[in-house]
Amino acid sequence: MFTGIIEQIGTVRQLNMPESVNLGDEGVTLVITQVGDLLTDCHLGDSICINGTCLTVTEMNSDSFSFGLSPETLRRTNLGQLKRGDNVNLERAMGISTRFGGHFVQGHVDSTGTIVAKIPEGNSLWLRIKPTDIDLLKNIVPKGYITVDGTSLTVCEVNDNEGWFSLMLVAYTQGRVILPTKPEGSLVNLEVDMLGKYVERIVEHSLNGQKTQDRIETLVRRALQN
Image (cartoon, rainbow, N blue to C red):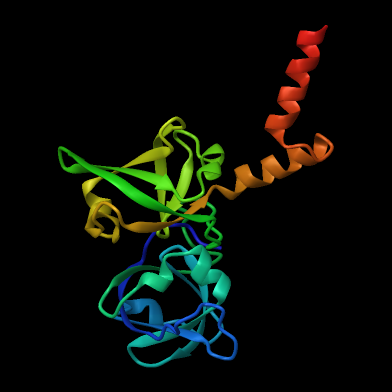
């Protein structure tokens, strides 16, 4: 479990990417360096959130740690696009005594999204992001939480017609995460608020397995017939 409060910006030292993500016997290893204090209490098998993706530490030394990437991780996230020298957001798993400053983040990326607009306003920065899976918009609500490349942020607007949502980054945040450095057209990792996903799942079961929208349409048709 994570909070979405970025602790450190690390740098990709190595990503050995095979030609196919249907990996067979060949694995993919991601090595991150310039990790600051994150190594002080890090152990093999620990969970670290890399750009919003929960990964397991498989190797470590005095200035870096390594992770194995599964085919599902490569399909679901933007990690396969990383190159040597790229910066990444880092957060250790939440401890019991941690001040809870963000929101409940699992590190399980739901989909990617594309930055379609960057608009400065004063010393703040607007971002508009279009999810790759447009159906994800139903789980994104104004003033609700979302995790973008591992950063806990508040949703400002949701435009269902055009298929995007917006965020505003204050100056403090801009200096401590990688989002402001990404140009328009960049792919980011998205994780919607897990509480909303659980509520949706419970409601669907209570409606006898029907999707919420399908159930509402059924009720409306019945009302019109009466």
